[in-house]
Image (cartoon, rainbow, N blue to C red; front, side):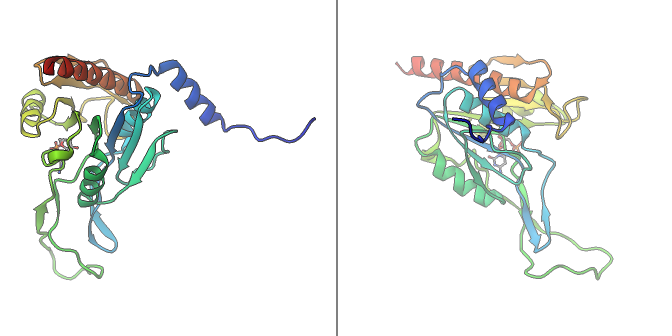
Length: 245
Ligand code: C5P
């Protein structure tokens, strides 16, 4: 029989092939949660506070974790990116919403990769109507948004990986964050370095882990960085498990 057929979109064929080539199955049967992108903290119906995160690193992590066979939930702030195949997406806007979604999805999870650039501060009050230009200057009152990593409580997955984006004193700050946020690994980078600016397709990171190891990686595509991060966290999970026995 000859008939019209519909071809699978080339992107899907590409994704699937790449998954088959790069993915082991070390995350098979594991629940993986990834957070990505910025958060939007509304000021009035038309304005918000946010940051320059593109979400690309988090989406690459979700993609790579799915390639490794994980059951992946991606909690994402506003990002203009395609959801990787096989990944469950949960869209959120604010830090509060991200906290709620993560608390919910981290229950019983094995790995959390917290790549989102959560706003540290949000406007203390929300104006129901658009704020109009009147005075020469206005003051914005900001209050701290919840520190999600620090407060995961009993929902904390077995292995938690945090990210640190620093423009100075990268190592000292990353190590401080690892302690303060009780994470097993910190992936640090400096967006002011050439070639890895916000929104770029590549990244150059240093991975610090709880055991005191430090791994500086070369600049490479974000998907390859994601694979390296996942491999490192799998090693760490193995060490943790052996340590417990
Ligand atoms: O913004 P900061 O450098 O503190 O981020 C370090 C880590 O903490 C990141 O993994 C980020 O996703 C997380 N974070 C968080 N809740 C916040 C701010 C950051 O979980 N309110």
